[in-house]
Image 1 (cartoon, rainbow, N blue to C red):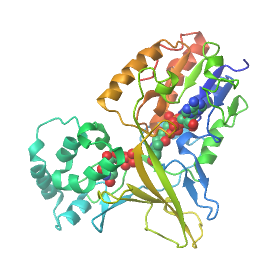
Image 2 (cartoon, helix red, strand yellow; image 1 turned 135 degrees about the vertical axis):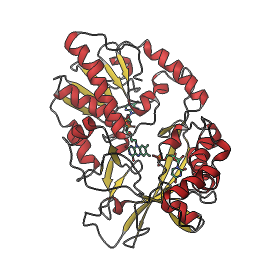
Image 3 (tube, rainbow, N blue to C red; image 1 turned 60 degrees about the vertical axis):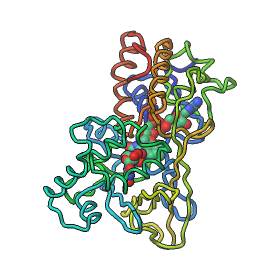
Image 4 (cartoon, helix red, strand yellow; image 1 turned 60 degrees about the horizontal axis):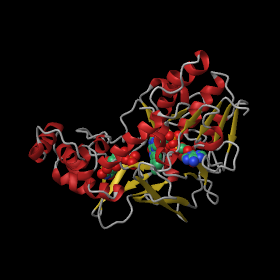
Length: 395
Ligand code: FAD
Ligand code: UDP
């Protein structure tokens, strides 16, 4: 087999491993993906009629405070100065998200100072003061009090995860900042922006190296193709970034995932909602949010005759759906531990990325974790013969 390393999946995890292995370690890499394009979920393309760049698998905003990752991604693309801001439409009114002093004052029809607002929320969260909530419902109430929680979080989360917030881990809501200023930036990170000439140009540049052979429309579990699981495992080291339960033929049961359905519409107007993302936190609206892609690139000279919007609906993934978000119930965590044990037995396979580790990874986290895998496992193996795996699934 004329390759040193097989990478399964060409998302940002696989691309980073392939790029580093080829450029830094001089390895011959074969990267396969079952989709007809590379880039995984960060892939985008220009909508045909309008030329507006559309993120095919849901809106992707790049942000990081990791200097190493920021330096790394800037080798392949420049970033615009786009700053993400989200609004939310509750009972016929539009509020800024994440919850900040503007949201609080608008909601309570008041003009609280930061200190007064803190005091109010402290009172409203009083029922859970001093506790350490483990589930999203209690954590949400503790963070912002019950009225704001019920207006902006409870039903949005219920729609998004199709799970009672009492059965979801508190960590999901900890991703969202709560601010006692009028700062309504969505992310807190040092660096933020969108790739100047689009995601796909960035992702293709990562794979553009003579030592990287990309094979699309190629499923790792299709035994008829050259780089299938049956033909490569044990013959050549593999970095696998597909779903971990699929790798083991669901032997320990299915892990639960959430998927999204995106309903795209081209409208013959210049501007539909005046901003890139509008959330819909009310129970009676079936979708969670609407994206309007022109607003991600105000610097571009897009047509004024039309705009592209996408309504996002969320549901449980079934076999055959794209697994997008790990649901992570306690039963899932038990199964994951069993899969990690199985992974320990695969001495020439490293599991990485969002699907391979069953973790909610943002792009910068996927890239950072891939760089660590190259440093800690792949480089020592190829330069000094260290065993490839020392415990299976990368934690
Ligand atoms: P993926 O991008 O999922 O790539 C995995 C690849 O493996 C896929 O291309 C898949 O086709 C391939 N594959 C799977 N099984 C097989 C097989 N059997 N054979 C061959 N190939 C296979 N991150 C942010 O930083 N900001 C955001 O705003 C953001 N928004 C997101 C919105 C949505 C809806 C989703 C789902 C994710 C979002 N993310 C965001 C996360 C981001 O997409 C991930 O961090 C990134 O995709 C991780 O890359 P990955 O390589 O681990 O996985
Ligand atoms: N969330 C919410 N209301 C909102 C926005 C977010 O309840 O208007 C909750 C929801 O549970 C979501 C979590 O906060 O899963 C994290 O939000 P984020 O926007 O980071 O989620 P993503 O869209 O990246 O999955």
